[in-house]
Image (cartoon, rainbow, N blue to C red; front, side, top):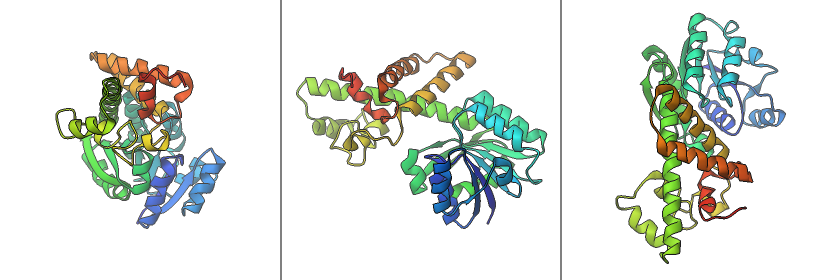
Length: 294
C-alpha cells in the first residue's frame, strides 16, 4: 500500500480520497477550505497543515484543483520537497498547455507524472467508477494504474503528456453539444404533443441514442437517476460544463480546428450561467431552451 498526498479535497477530491483510504492506502490530505478538511478527516484522511507537509513522505501526489494556474503553483511549490521517485497524478481538468508545463516541472525534478482528468461526476467519484483519461509515459502510467483503480471504473492511457486533458475536453464538448440536442428534441416533442416517455422509448433504441439521453435524460421520468428528477440538483454543474467548453474552444483556437457546434454550445451555456444557473445541473439547460427565465 502507498502513502498518498491528496491536494484538493472538494466535491470530487473528497470521495476519491475516501476510496483510496478504503483500499488500504495511507492518505494525507490538504485543502484551503476548512469544511473540506473536516469531511476528509471523517473519511479517514490524515489532515495536514499544508501541501508541503502532505507531500513530504508521500509515494504519490494527487492533485484535484480548479484551474491550470493552481496546478502549476502547487507543482512549483512541492516538486523539490517530495521524496525521490514520487509520482505526480493531476486529476484536475485544465488546459492542455498547463498540463504539459506541469509535466515539465515534474521532469525537471526527475519525477514521473501523468495528467489524468476524470469523467463520471460526483456520483462516479463516490461509487469509485470514474473514467480516468491518462496522459504520460508508459512507465508513469504503469505506476499510476494501481493507484487509480480504487477510484475507477475504467483507466485509459491516451498518449503522452497532455493527452488525457485533450481527451477530456473533446469528450465533454461532445457531452455539452449532445445535451443541447436532446433538450431541443424534448422541447420540440412537447410542442408537437408527444409525451416524454414516447420520445425516450423511440430515441433510446434508435439512431438518436446517446448518453445524454439514456443515462442523463433532461426530463423527469424516463431515467429515474437523472438530475431532472431532483429539480436539477447538480451531478455536474453548469459552471463546470462551461469551464470545459471554454477549454475546448481555447484548444480549438490554438490548434486551428473548426468547432462551430462547440462554439454555439459555449455561447448557450454562457447565457445559461449568466442567468444564475451556474450551480444547476448542466442538463437543466432544457429550461433555458423552453424560454424560461428562472
